Length: 125
Image 1: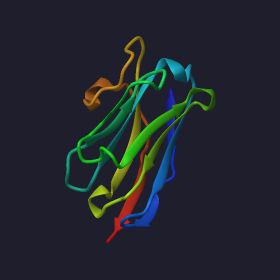
Image 2: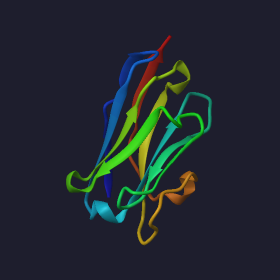
Image 3: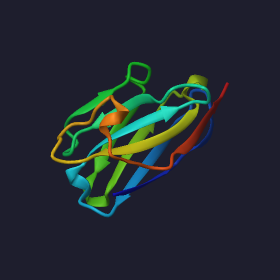
């Protein structure tokens, strides 16, 4: 499956962005999905995950209450709504797909099989 992210950009602290990740190639609803981010000089960090049917979601502690992950299986797309952005949210955000038959996402990036190229999010203070 191929993944392409979009929606990144420059935003002021307190602002919002919505990232999209569109999948192609296989049946999207068969894949649990996740969002990760990586800032310069830092390790990749788990942001959020969502189960195949969208019912189960999980968030990293640093984004809980501010970010929302969702998916539209009819559009082969997973979203990350980011509100109340902070300068420390600045990073390259990547989506990832977890191969079936696993149902839920994971906080471990090694559990994912396919990755997008990433989209830059920059939050100014």
